[in-house]
Image (cartoon, rainbow over all chains, first blue to last red; front, side, top):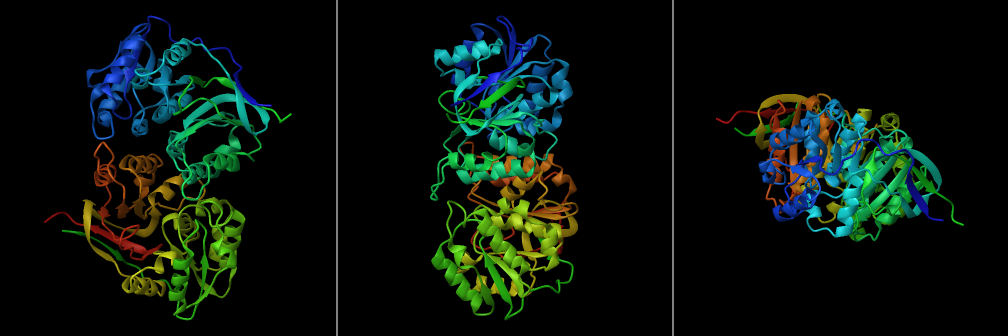
Length: 296
Length: 296
C-alpha cells in the first residue's frame, strides 16, 4: 500500500479572491527580471499586483540590503487592502530579516504568504503567528511555468486544497497535525534560535536541493539532537533534488530512510513539492492526516 | 597595527610526553590507508601508538557504522594508559556519536584530543567537560606533511604553545577568555542541541572550507540569532578556504566583516589554522588574549 497525505480541517476563511490585491516582495535573493515581469503579468490577469520599484535591486546575493527588503516586507504586512504576499524568488536572505519581525505583526492583519525554499524562514514566522501560508512556486518561476502549474497555484491561492496520494512509505503509521516546514537547510539553520517554527505534534514537511547526502545527514542529526524529531507527529518528504552521492556512493534516499525510518512516527516520501519539475502548492498550518499503511 | 592572539595562562600539566601511549581513532569519515600508516609511522618514532584493526572500515561516508566508531572512541577514553587521542581524519560523522557520550566520561580520565574540522564536534564535548584539546592536523594528513609541520605538532602535543601575530583586525579591542570552536559548519549544526560548546565569555575560533559566502552568512546568522555572538568575548578567524564568490561576486571576507565587524568585541582574522596550507596547532580551552589595536 502506498501512503497518503490529506487535509482534515475545513479550509480557512482567509484566502485570496479574484480582484484582491497581492503584494509581491523579494525578501531573499535577486531574480531574473524578465521572468519576474512575466510572472507578474500572469498574476495581473486575475489580481491587483503591487510591488516596489526597487524590488529589482541587486546587492550581491541579496535583493537589496536588509533595510530595503525589511521595509518592503513591512509595507506588505501593513497594507490593509492586501490579502496575499507573494515572494519573487528564494536564494538566501529571508533569515537575516527575522530578528526584526514579530509574529504579532503577522497576526495583526493576516495575509497569505506564498513561496518556498529560502522563504521557509518566513513560513516559520507565519507558523509562530498561527497564520496559514502557502508553500508554492514564486513569481519569477511563474514566468516560465506551464499553464497547469499556474492554474494549480491560482486555485490554491483561492483556497483549493488537494491532498497527495501514491506516496512512498518510509515508516508506517497514521498521524494528524498541522503541517509545518519547508526547506531542510533553512529549518536546520533556525534550530536553537527564537525564529524556529513550532513543531510539537506537527507533520514536518522537508525538501532539499543541492546538498550532498552527508550534509542532509548532518542537518537531520541537528534536528535529532535538538529534539525536533522526537516531538513531531509525522514526517512528509518532498523532493530532494541534486542531492547526489559523492565518491562514497551513498544515496540521499538511504540517508533519509536511515535517519527518519525509526522515529516511531509515520514518514511518507515523494510529495511533488520543492525544487523538482513539479512543485504543487501545499497549505502550511492546515491540519493534515498522514496515512502510511503496511505493505499488503 | 596588526592583531595578536596570545596564551595568557600557564600550560596545563596535562600533556603528552615522549613514550606515552596515543590512541588513534576514526570518529568521522574513511581515509587514505597509505597516508594513515605513514602518519602512524611518524607518531611511532616518539610514542606508543594503538589503534583498532577495524579503523580502516568504510561504510559509505563513514569510517564504519556508529557502533564501531563509538566503541573505538569509548575504548580510547577508557584506556588508563593513554594520554592522547589522535583522530585519523575529519569528513563527517563525529556529530552522530554525541548523543551517546557524556562530558563526565571525558572528565573521568582526561586525555588530549587531537584533530580539527569534523572533530570540532568532539572538541565541543571536551569543552563541555572542561578538558583541554588540541586543534591540529590529523594522522592521515601527517603522512604527507613537511617536517616542520610534523615537528610543530609534536611540540604542541607535549605542551608547547606559540601565539599568533600579524593578524588582520576586523574589529578593534582587547579581550581575554578560553578559546573554543573550530569548524563553522559543525558549530552551526550544534546550535540548539545539548552538544554545543560553552561559548559565554569565550574567544570563538572559526574556520571553514568549501562553503559559498551566502552559506557562511547563513551559518553566522544562526550564531547571531542563537545569541552566541552576543555572548563571546572575541572572535578569531582561521582560514576560509575555497569559500569562493558565486555569480554574485561577494567575497567571503566581505561576509565575515559585515556579520562580525560590529559585534562590539575584537575580531582578528588570518590565523594559519584550518584547511589551508598551514594548520598550526592551537590549544582549545586555554585562556587567550586577543589584541586588536587601532590602525596607527
